[in-house]
Length: 213
Image 1 (cartoon, one colour):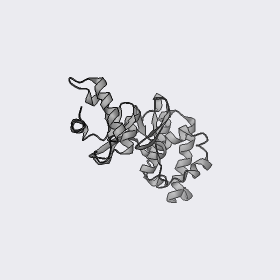
Image 2 (tube, rainbow, N blue to C red):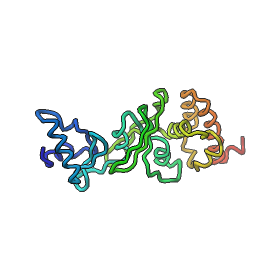
Image 3 (cartoon, rainbow, N blue to C red):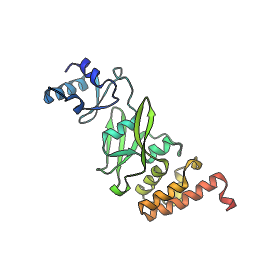
């Protein structure tokens, strides 16, 4: 398969899997050898086995890190610090894209950056949605309330006031406290229920309402 033909097939896809190229009368082994040569020549980026992106300047749209994160490990959704920064709930830029998955945890180093995956049980794999992330791309991202609860669930001691203060949470008025409490109840975790109580107090302090209660 010539590179020009590959561009015609995958040119509009920010990332693509080998299977996209195997339709019709093609030799899978030959396609994989060609992909390896294109990676070696710098015209393709390999994100993991079987997952690729066109390299600049050949790509029509730069893959958004959140979209790449969804594809590198499935099932997964972006959550934790990355989602909190995305929503403006923490002030720091997060250089590693953080996600949760029901598969094994792991960390991937790719030409598009670093991707970290934390494991949660199947019963906690909820509370995410498909969002526009720019350039016509969409990614699965935790809703703000679930991103915060995922972090609390996975981080030891995170239901304590000291840890919650260290997060430097901001814009807490954008959180739906009712949804936060509902998600914590759905999880069945006493730790999350304790954390939600403290987060509610912090949100009320931020708005000045706590002093009037």
